[in-house]
Amino acid sequence: MPYPRKLLNDYETVAVDLHPHWWYFAQPVAALVGSIILGVLARIYTDGTGTPRAALVYLLIALIVASMIWVVVRYLKWMTTSFVITSDRLIFRAGVISKMGVEIPLERVNTIHFSQSIFERIAGSGDLIIESGGEDGQQRFTDIRRPDQVQKAIHAQKEAHDKRRFTVSGVDVGGGDVASQLEKLEGMLERGTLTAEEFQGQKDRLLGR
Picture 1 (cartoon, rainbow, N blue to C red):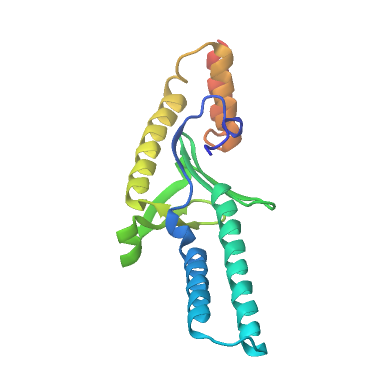
Picture 2: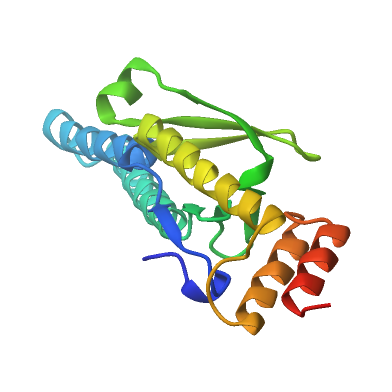
């Protein structure tokens, strides 16, 4: 499911839209497979119909059901977890019922690291650690697909964003009529890309004051 277009600004574009890597399912799937194997072994190697065997059967059924529920819950979380890189910001959203989200403007991104264990490197998964200016300082995002490629994508979008920001602050807002350019300026003011003084100066220029 792609990131909802209604949550983006009118002029904002999506460069990368990811759900967590399939490694995200490793633990619940391993628990489900393990409980099924235990059930099969118990069926083969236990005899009789006494209370101990019945108790073991009920226990294994409970383990299988619990593992299946864990897989379903993890899938719902996977479906509602997004890591998005746009032309203006990084967005992370997660949650089935309760929601949480992180947004980092590209101009505040300072350093991007990625880390992978041996198994994660083989699977093509890993973590991203993003250091940014602000209250949080550092954010870790886990189970990212091909984190080295995502790191490059962030750098590319940040570079393009910085060029556009320089153009807006120094020369021009871009094409389009005055109303659309004013809308872009207002969006940049809201996100902190422009100061109030820069916004007013660009607005006066567009309006010919």
